[in-house]
Image (tube, rainbow over all chains, first blue to last red; front, side):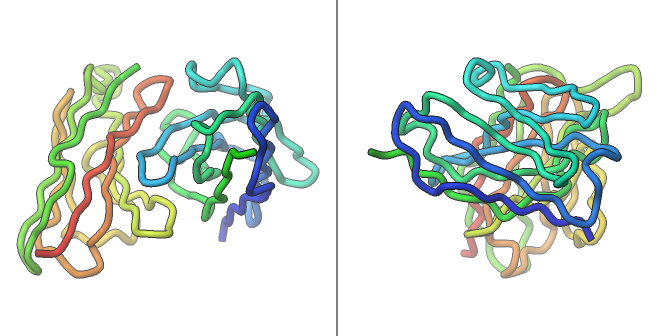
Length: 120
Length: 113
């Protein structure tokens, strides 16, 4: 059974970099699928941040592309999110998720999420 | 960006009654080449991540009860719960996966009347 688990600091200071890791168990991220990040501000809706494929192909939301990097550690079966120059608007629950296939980008498996608060 | 607009924002339905949630996209999410609508529906309960219910606008994910159904094409889509159960109380989101950025509707909160 495939399982995704987010981890990282729950509190980040404004202007600093938010860094999160998603650990995948039960499936090798170097085999197939796009893997990515989605966030949800408290009480609000969902926003896709970006996704990657193990070949090195990465796609980001245009609204975040200047600040975001998604990278992978295939040996650890993990992938990471770095979001720089954060503000209070980046406070959100951050989910890692898997797409159903490389050509159909709905998300069929999600982690439980990790809450990140941006505050000094 | 393709903007997804759901209606209503909230909905109260009696146990056993039908719930209908609408989703409209700012441009068509239908691909002529494969005759598919790139539209999914999710259910999110408090404190939980979203759960995939429907994809390709009308295909139920494995394990999803058949009281959930999706329909529509092009820009207008509908999620119907044919007979509301207590466990269906949640927020429901539509999502287009036609193009980057992959956008969600604002959500519809479904409550029990």
